[in-house]
Length: 196
Length: 196
DNA sequence: ACTAGTGTATTGAACATTCATTCGGTTTGC
DNA sequence: GCAAACCGAATGAATGTTCAATACACTAGT
Image (tube, rainbow over all chains, first blue to last red; front, side):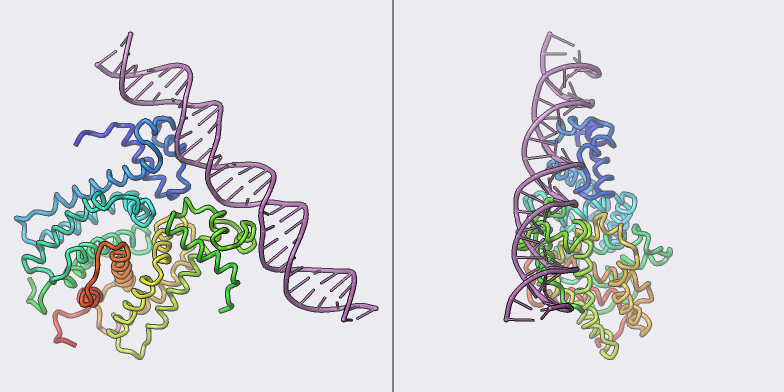
């Protein structure tokens, strides 16, 4: 909503880069400051502590991801179409922001994550799970918990991006399209249907 | 093969616990030592440095996971059966060793991972991908890269375990069986086949 | 059986360094 | 002229690592 102060954004970006390069440890505030082009003390004008910086950065990112979700999740668009749009939308976002992906993954697997209350974390999940709830309700998906489907879908996207952002795999054009298809085929309801 | 010295194993276990609780940063060697019941200096008898400890611990874990893979991957057992055995095998292993899972996830998303040569990392992948290569060769799976299928499968398992080891989800008995089924349905070849 | 000798395992206090944070002072915007 | 933004050297606590000293295990010589 309210535009983020330039310095604050610079600090965020600097932190993102450094955490990717050096991890949480090995990312001293002095370096964050230097790369952001501010003084060390300035960071403490915007953030209470390093932990506070990390957590706020997580929210900052989370909101960007939610924005992608909101952009692609449209109740008036057929569900399957939405499904692939969301897949590609998140896939593109992560691909174009590899720093974000690494930070995100490090964060959710770190103790930082456990010191957050559930409400703040689930802001993202609320949207994701809501979408899959629709898919179940409308009968497109297997009648499992939306949490399960949402989590598996997200894991599918993330691991895909990590696979070739690590350079270990070059995807052919056709192959990229197969990946959400695997997910869809696995989660769709019914025994068999003719090609849609 | 050769049994690991008691102290060394204690240091490994201590590190696993602490990394889960406090992350790589926030896990001082002094604490590792204390919880392992050894003196600080002793650690440096077995490991050159903290980084060396972390990396050797990664190998130690990796070998355990490979052992699970080898145990369940049997060319004489029908592929689909193997597929589910491996899924459950890894799922059980991670479920019963939540410390391992957290460490593993933190490690692969950290800069430690990038400072490893590919050969050592891919020891695990070699087995995993080999299995999926068989599935493709025998015509059970969609003709995609084994790397893709293997990575997606592993991501599926891990995210499943994380989902309820974080306590956010209680799986009903029947639901657990659905999860590898989703994966299988997504990756299996052919338009439709009668139930196997 | 005893001793001396040798290398390994272990200890924990001390060291040097790094790093998050502070704070008095300066600049900027209004 | 005031408040908020900003600076960056100084500080103090925390932490990875070292090392001199000690205990232990084992062999060989007498």
